[in-house]
Image (cartoon, rainbow, N blue to C red):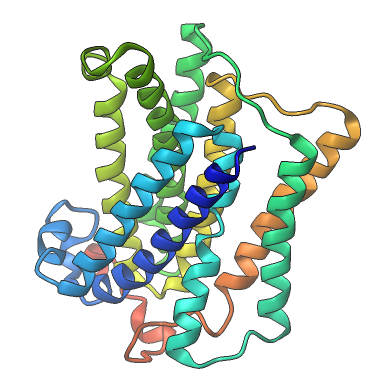
Length: 302
């Protein structure tokens, strides 16, 4: 595991975490008529803080792509999950709240889970899987699950909708990261012509835009604490599944190693949930109460 890959992944996490905070603060003021519509992005483009947040997110995605180019998805994805720590740091600075027991517990669970998974699994790269059935099966399961969650979100209660959309976006972002690595490898091995004539770069673009609409719709409906933890938890799980499923990433498979890896992933999810529910994760810069921010879906409005 290269130190440069770790630095790039943590830099990406820092940019993503700060970007998500700024995006949610802007998206919560968007009209609900834009819910799950590309029009939402057009309206948000008029908000300066959202554009800054998108700029930070773009920087994070570039750093993440560089990290994926030099390391395995199974290594980079758990490190990207630490974006919640950076979001927490920014929101804590804004709200002036202490971490307390819950905050410190979430921090150590997340950091310890990442360390446990990486040390026990020792992920290493392999050859990209060439079996079309396995390749498309993994992609189909991840994308199909994201679609089902999105459809379910339209019929779920307003309190559950943001989390479902965030999980769907996280799955798409994890898949996007895996295909970004494929595109980077193709560019490095065969040049621009081969990269641009393959389907993966265009799939990366479609997944990115779709995920962005889902995330902004989740941010529009409810406070950050109801969406960012779900997004942060789903992305590394999907990325690791894709890395092992069709990128050829390999992890240690001994009983003890698998047990520690499973415990590490569980600790990552548990830490994300604890941090996401922490009082320092705000409803917004104006301090609006949670029950005021959760808004009904367009069809539920009178």
